[in-house]
Amino acid sequence: MNFSAMPSKQQNPLNPKKLLLSKWTAVKPSHKRKHFLVSKVILPELPDAAIEFIELEAVFDKSTQVIPWRDLKETDIWLQGWV
Picture 1 (cartoon, rainbow, N blue to C red):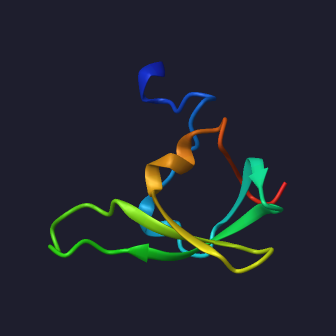
Picture 2 (cartoon, rainbow, N blue to C red; picture 1 turned 90 degrees about the horizontal axis):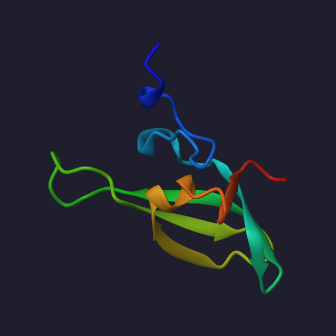
């Protein structure tokens, strides 16, 4: 069995094309912003380029932020779902 191909506990296995409307919880909430929704997957200018960024919307106050989608793999920052 090839264990190097299996995701580690420190990473959430993600596909950027399936992130739209997914739910996330900030491990360390800021300004009462704990629960987030991926409101937009930002497509690159070149059609063959890889997706790099997403827009997160806070459920609490609808504020948005653009982050690299790979940041969601960091389990010390983000948890998948609303916890």
